Image 1 (cartoon, one colour):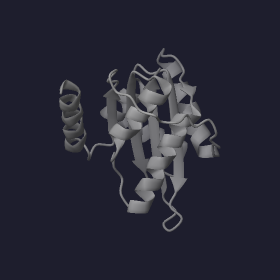
Image 2 (cartoon, one colour):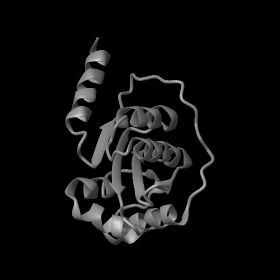
Image 3 (cartoon, helix red, strand yellow):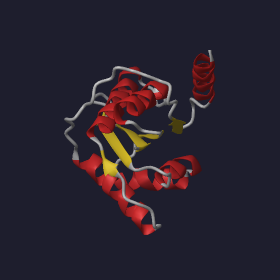
Length: 167
């Protein structure tokens, strides 16, 4: 009963803050799932540049670098595809993504930044750092991260999903 109540409360919190562009969740150690680890992911130049810029920024303020994880980037890509297919920019299904990362990778904390229509890695990082909730994720107590940057073939606009995890 307690597990169900926690899940319901987490769901409503996510729904209430759905319009945000930054989100985070902590592990529920009682959750179990049979998710599969994704080990293959091919990074494009923009994705690699954003990851590099985030780590460069973290080091400049005395924080640890984050390790890139293909599974997290795959989950990020799934969300970019969802946003493009549905013509939305949101955190829908963040709880499912975070629960998957918690179950598959053993994460204890997961956060997410999304963005839309920034042309360069520098521009998206600058925007995230100017937003307190995004900056909080970038500067957060995380150890790993992943990213996907996908272009909508119809509009040419870029969609970004950047997920952070403490493993």
